[in-house]
Image 1 (cartoon, one colour):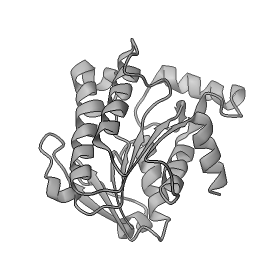
Image 2 (image 1 turned 90 degrees about the vertical axis):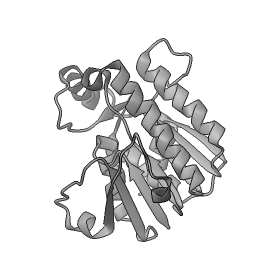
Image 3 (image 1 turned 90 degrees about the horizontal axis):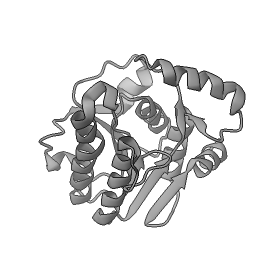
Image 4 (image 1 turned 45 degrees about the vertical axis):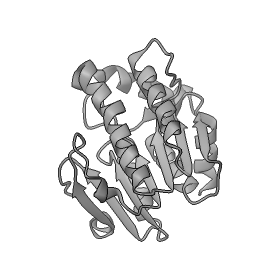
Length: 216
């Protein structure tokens, strides 16, 4: 199988990349990034093909012939501003999805968020909800949307309030009711790509946890 990933420099994307590289069934793995990444892991260096991409002007030929696509693109309003956030979390995701669909990609796996709704009053969940609805319109043979709660990871960038919440979750949320490690999300996404499923699957936090645990 051939897979591609966009957003592999993010916290979930990094874990998806590692999970894909560990699966021998994926003989070809392409990471589309805005710049080349220097991997320290020797397995990633050998297994991953990198391709620099302009998300504003995607070459659809680059997305021909993939079996599965993984999209973990995302930024924050604080980092990119309102316009920048919408451009990355909505426009870029849809640019990639349309190119993948035109390239006959059979599966598209999208990392969304808990509470995503096009009718939400909050920018983050509203944008994620808009993407979910518009991805459905593309009619992939199989579309899988993942809605994890608070992501637990060691971020390179500083987000003090989120760091405090993550620290609390280690003691107050040991059953993963509202938080989840990024490694678990990635494991579920990759494991699910190897299963048969419905044409559209919406996976909430509990579904993601079950998939991840059953993949061990």
